[in-house]
View 1 (spheres, rainbow over the protein chains, first blue to last red):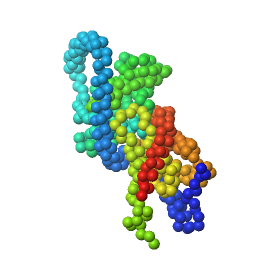
View 2 (view 1 turned 120 degrees about the horizontal axis):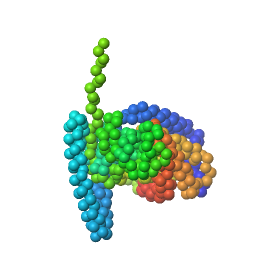
View 3 (view 1 turned 90 degrees about the vertical axis):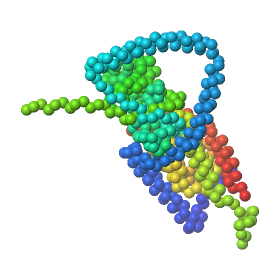
View 4 (view 1 turned 90 degrees about the horizontal axis):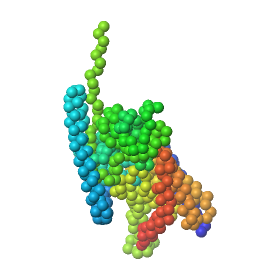
Length: 291
Length: 170
């Protein structure tokens, strides 16, 4: 088919001016949008109110749909639980016996730990969670990794707060509406979590890669090598994340860097707890030397 | 002169004719609200696909600047920085104006090709504009959703055509 000729300029001045005005508005709009982008670079929390309203409005639809998804997941899990029920039962019993022994050992360690801390007069100010809420959605079409949390400023959720599930760290609150907020997931490119490797105690930085994994980089070059299966927990350095929250497990090592997979799967964890911003207790400043 | 009121051949619902393209594009952008929690971008950019489909099917319904407010809505829903889709979609409209003049021949395959080029370019562009500085996110993360978008585009074009005939039904 030959291409239809539309927007033919013709001889009508009105049509010509109208078209020209359209181009001018478009160019001005592009410049305006570039300005908006620049503002977003300098202050990522800009236009928080407008974005919060959209998060709220979107959460209404997402929350309704989430019920269906959860129900579907449950049906699938119920059906698959019937298969290999017998062998699973046996394996679970064995595991339970193992875990019981481990729990007894852990209780002993806990008691000893508390006693030693008392001895060393070490006090920790670990924050208590503000609330727990459902993760209902995400931004699956965009290039940023956000999840939607079904709690907002009305419940006291503020940008910067830590979100974790029972398996580990989920992320930080990025922007909040009244009833819902956006959580910056660990896998987003903006995330950088100070971690330590449990096996070696080595300090490292875990940063999101946008594809479901994180890159772990040692803070000090020439330290001990990462190993597959190493567990990374928050170190509490910098005072954003409280210490000892499980973050990720290392799945591949290349040189002094490693690829890790977050432990908490936000799609599976139904509830996530919101913690206030952690601030490490400030020790007394060193006394000024007397002259 | 024939009065349009009460005349079944002249009467048409103006409201529906103008709102259907806008509403369907907004619904496409709102596909970001589907209740899955994705740790990588997996859902195709339906808002962009609807926009391109309407623009290719009916080049005359929107002025060039119509991409600005639609892009703003997409930015708000997709979590990108405000301005990302506003810039990219408006540039796409300006380029499509030129493509309309340059193309001498059009059929379904050519439209699919034009849309594919647009989808790939805008996917890379929105990756570049939406990443914070120092991000480790690779451009390769856009591949799954972009492939999905290209493969789904003919279906979107069909849906748009059906919506178009419903929109203009007397």
